Structures are given as structure tokens and as C-alpha cells.
Image 1 (cartoon, rainbow, N blue to C red):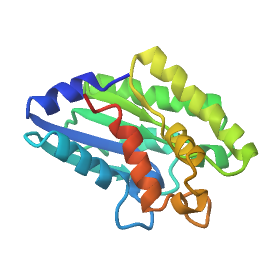
Image 2 (cartoon, rainbow, N blue to C red; image 1 turned 90 degrees about the vertical axis):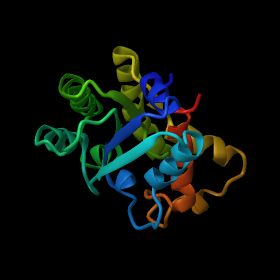
Image 3 (cartoon, rainbow, N blue to C red; image 1 turned 45 degrees about the vertical axis):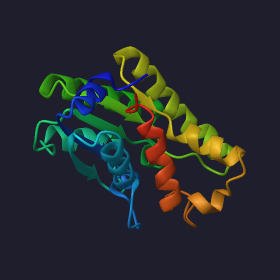
Length: 201
């Protein structure tokens, strides 16, 4: 599924404001370039006439519940054309159920649609090395799949893109830091590629 409204604005060379709501993966934890930096380069390279602004609203340690709270407290200052929503790992590690996670993401979608009429792009987070952890986080990603279908909004499957690269032989340690959660710059570039896939013609 493509971000049709956003692609139309970008292709027409219009102004385009993107807000990215998420956790440390969106904030770009402990790197010079996070996925939003790479995504900005991809957007500007492919849509050179568009006037692109990106607001990074990532907060390390945040959950979907916290993101909803921040959203309702007007963290988005300008009226965006599109909003990225990326949460999941902290919810899992905070013992928040996948159902509650889904309810919070759903509430965010409804709030954004009512307040801004902005296009919404859901974003999965990374995959893990441990099969058990992967199985656990995939229950959260499945909830995003369901919301993507329910609201007819694009879903950028970062975890699938990572898995595809790993199957090609990319070493896991090259795309994730030694905490086995946060991406390296190479990992962030892969995140950007997955998200770019919903913006390209």
C-alpha cells in the first residue's frame, strides 16, 4: 500500500510536512544519522521540487500509550501532511499487551485523522536475533497489519526488510548495536529504505 496523498504532493513539487512520532528508533539514538535523515535524503533526491520539512518527535523509552499522551498534549505544532507512527519494542518490554498496544495506536490514528486529516503511515520496528523475542514482537506487528487493513493506511514493514537483508548474508551485528535493539547507521538506512518504499512511485 502506497502513501498516495503524499506521493501526489511530492510529485507536484508542493510543500510537504512530515511528522514522525515514535521511540528511540525514531529519535535516532546514539548515531549521527537516523532513519529520518536517510529518508529525507531519499525524498529530496527523488522529489527535488518539493519543499520538505520533517519533525522528529521520537522519544527514547516511549510506548504507544506515551505517544498518544504526547499527541493529545499537542506535540505536533504544525499541521502535517503525513505522520509516521513507530512504536512497539518498549511496549513489549513494559509488559503492555498487544491488544492494549493496538488500542493506543488505533486511538492515535483516529486523533490524527480528526485533528489534521493527515495521511498516516504505520511503521514496524526492528527484528531481533532471538527467535523467542522475534515471535513476541511479531504479535505487535500483526496488530499493525490489522490496523493497516482496518483504516486503509500504509504499513512500512521494517522488520521484514531487515529479515530480507539478513537472508542475503548481511551480518546481524553490522546493523544493530551491542544492545541488540538499537540500529547502527547501516540499520537505520535499512529502516529508511523500508519506509521509502511507501513513498516511491
